Image (cartoon, rainbow, N blue to C red; front, side, top):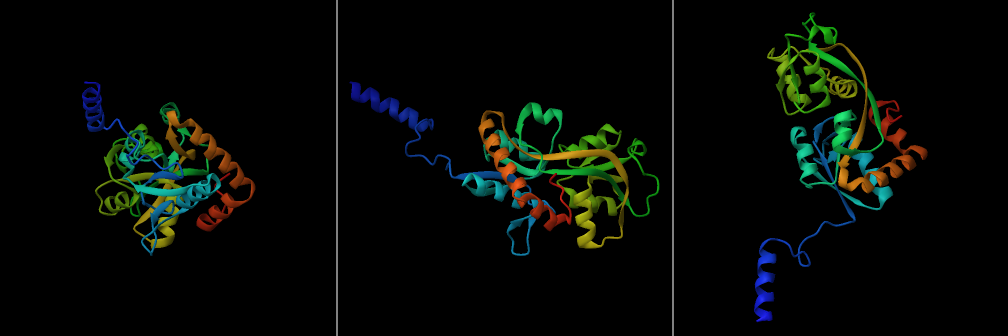
Length: 252
């Protein structure tokens, strides 16, 4: 009777996925990282088809200090925090701007990027120079991004897009009036494309700090990440990676 009862319980538990001895548990030597892969110069596909960029190199350097291998999980920005919460990955490396809402919801690392926000318009648009010019206008933004919140907070109607490149396309097509984004991303786009159809019309007046994001129940991971960032800052690795992509140290 006991054998039959045990067999029945075992079968139910196995069906429910409660037994993990023979399952594929997460590898403690692997750091799963969520990133867009479409946001140059931070996270994008190189000419060889592999992920590269400032955030990619920084998180790989962090993982090296932790003695872990990195497994990237490409995810659209608007789904990236849902992926973190559902444990599809352990960390988000995608220029996560530090703000009170995210500090309440997630475990954030120390900042590894400092930058400013800018307003981008069609080259022929002379009506937008500051955030105060945005009420009644339409801005192309990732709806859950910090810059999307800045645009909406300034009174701009937000047209949701998947990323910066799509925002620029809508801007050039005249379907939106502006996009608010990071000066480093805009500078990289202009440098690589020489696109004369857009311009930086003004600054938001806000300095932002970007960090890695983890779950609150994995605070120890963020402690380890911070320790690794301290070492990378001290040995000059962060500055070296930053100089490679921006010609300046934006990691301070």
